[in-house]
Length: 413
Image: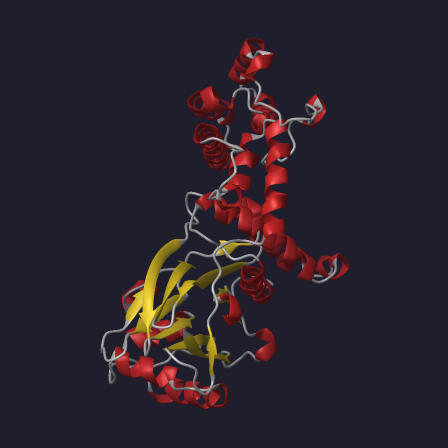
């Protein structure tokens, strides 16, 4: 299928193109589209939003699996850190600003579209989103405007969930992507839109228009008319003074002026998959089950390969979830007078899974330093119970890891 595609971007009144905190990116030949909205309350939000959308083109998210998202964000952070100002410049930030950035990092919402099947009469797409950046669509001949992940103007009143640039702020059970699949045909139109614009469409502007009329007004715009349109809507049609960005995609079943052929993406790059499998084997030899769970992700890099069984992955995920939940519950307790007592109670719940896990070694040392004696006792008993045959099997021709490096990849406290 072919599509007419446009990117529309304009900034809030006190900003300009260089400080626009929205970011859009697309690769129509591979069927990939992404839009992010950096949270203006955080520093370097624009850079984080730009990083997310461009990294999606380089390495598309294939599912909403929480472990896959965690792995993907770790790779995106590497790109983000490389794009930040030099360390000397960061150190020259005002003390309060620098502390804020070290504490909060950057935050952004994200909405993505991936074409999975492209036929002459229809396309099948996967949509992933977190926060209040939305995908909206209207089918040919219909007056209904559908939206994902938010569906109503009232949904935008809540603070949006954002992806954090700080690894310590990511919580797998909390930062969940939403997923939806959709089939589009000729004449159907889809928009990726940041929150101010999405809300305006769903509300029917200032109430004098219908959502379908607002949708059509946006879909008809071109980059050259977008600034004038946004200013007019702010002045008399109820559009909020915020960054307003959209990617417009209008489907056609034949080649026409301005339309291009949509390609598809169904898998990650082979080299990236091979790298993940190699890193997984390293984590496996080190018995770092938390890192194994993250590297395995949704399993797409391991399809068709008899390298790992479901029981092993299930155990790795259980260990990872237990470790992360314990850390999240423990942090608020550290400054309390009864920290040792409260930590001991927490540890009793998680000890069966974590007492002998290398990925929890640093955590166990922290608990022992707090005075939690049960950690030392359980840990010693677990060491005595571990037999050599209980280790995970090694790949043929690979050497066992150095015991001094068995904690590599562990989550820091």
